[in-house]
Length: 141
Ligand SMILES: *[C@@H]1O[C@H](CO)[C@@H](O)[C@H](O)[C@H]1NC(C)=O
Ligand SMILES: *[C@@H]1O[C@H](CO)[C@@H](O)[C@H](O)[C@H]1NC(C)=O
Ligand SMILES: [Cu+2]
Image (cartoon, rainbow, N blue to C red; front, side, top):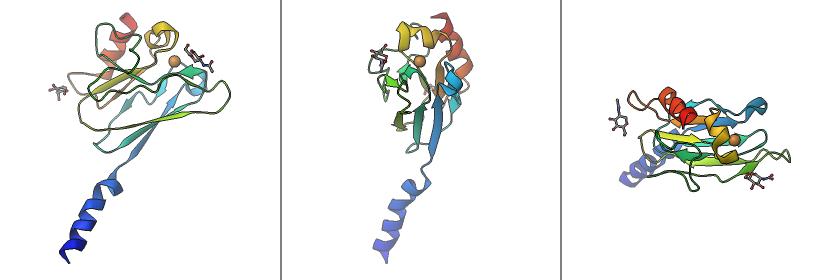
């Protein structure tokens, strides 16, 4: 009886975890679509590269935003490395959300030129650390 209850309780987080899909380079653009994801701990964000050759890399919110560094900015950062759709393979990268703090990301391609062109996104931005301000910081960096 009790063991069944505990077994079911242990399953609930995985049942409720959601995957959030983000397109990278939709319509050949230097873009992440959508630019903002609101995700719970345990959720995944799956990025699919739909054109060219890009990266999904965590960045600092301000200062030297572009290009984000190899390995990404932590804690709990991420870096897909370069993922190319030049062969039409539409490669994917999945990040599992492990905290609720804002994470900002960008593409590191072309020495930061994609990032400065606005190829940026945010996971769980908040009223203090907004996506709009991050993107402004990226364009100015
Ligand atoms: C993707 O871009 C990186 C960095 O510019 C480059 O080193 C790599 O060769 C590119 N990949 C392809 C398949 O062109
Ligand atoms: C936004 O996130 C930062 C980093 O976790 C936190 O310090 C700040 O209090 C948060 N602001 C709001 C309005 O939630
Ligand atoms: Cu790019």
